[in-house]
Image 1 (cartoon, rainbow, N blue to C red):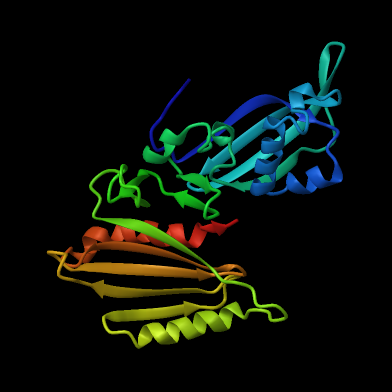
Image 2 (tube, helix red, strand yellow; image 1 turned 45 degrees about the vertical axis):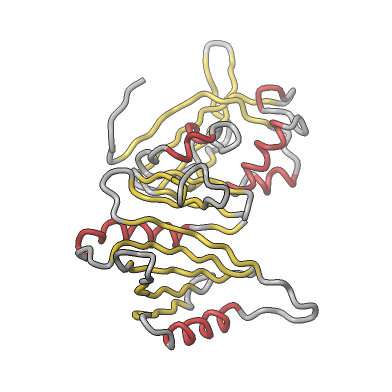
Length: 278
């Protein structure tokens, strides 16, 4: 195995078995990362055959390459004839996300819980949580921890940079109860919350982005109480969707120089941009 820390770009090639008997439903699932995760789950549960076990399996070459957080894969089927290898039709090319790679396919919380507490590799890592139901992208060099500690029964997960952290990300998921016969206007809900935030003391820089598929508001809030020796600053990002909303907040001591937390804050905003409700 050849290793290099923080490469600018990479690619790797592998021979694979490809199922040639996917149902129409499985074809649709295979188009998305969450769908492919569902197929992998069915294979583990024995509900469908793995490619290597399928009587209609095909040989193929899989090439995966990437740079930063971008991934692209190419899948080429082939068959063997006496003395030569013949490529079949055209290769299938697919854009993906960090986490859509061979090295991550078996990297799930059920199989390896310790990975949650280790720094994410180059390009970051996507972690799936069934409860309360979201996928979170963890930037390179960040990891998960517990607040206040790992043994407290009321502990909650936080995410922070592994080396020299100045703050941490916390996430809260809000589910709205559906009202029979009434549809929700998520953009109007975001506008109303932005209006209310602007009326709160110690809240500043409230912004609303309604051009996204899901409305997104962010603000800055200063927090202090008698239990804290030093006041803290929260940079909050809230995403509104069909089920409710998700709040992603990065907090740090208010007397920290802004330039010191600039890089961590940029990562926190990217976490908010990439979070996916299940």
